[in-house]
Length: 195
Image (cartoon, rainbow, N blue to C red; front, side, top):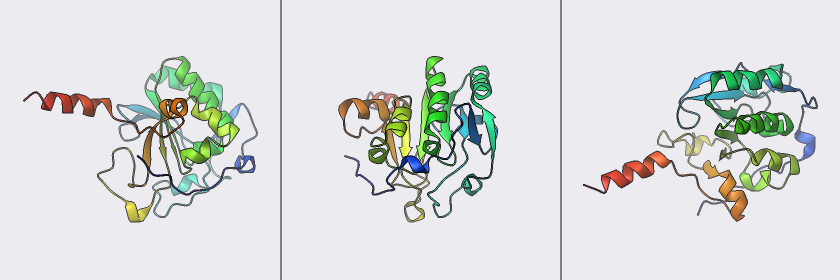
């Protein structure tokens, strides 16, 4: 069982981008990540974060006035052209839930796997209608703030041991947290049991 983390309650007042056709980004689409989920992935770096995690590796993404607005349709064209699975990161993509939902929904419509990182906890994200709608198009969520006291280089796809890898669709279906398990690890474990 994965413990619930105490975190920020999510209010619609936190959402800062009211333009349905533009997403606020901190950087262009990254098309070569191997650390933001399994395989080679494209990463959408959103702008804006309220969590202020000590020693965050992306502090330039915190300000709501930094970054730039980018057309969602152009971003979706770039994602399709690239063809890699995507990760929504930042910043916190759940502070732009409508815009990120459009991107995630498009990615799913063309058969891509979608991961997202958030400083919010899953239990809080499902309580807000807009963030829950975004979750419906996310395969895996890495949730919780980065905590320097729990930093570990042993954590796969996350920076601290308090953060969880959540199978979002299974969690929504079952009504409880279901931990994501890397299918490649299952294959390796099964093969090692043969010898």
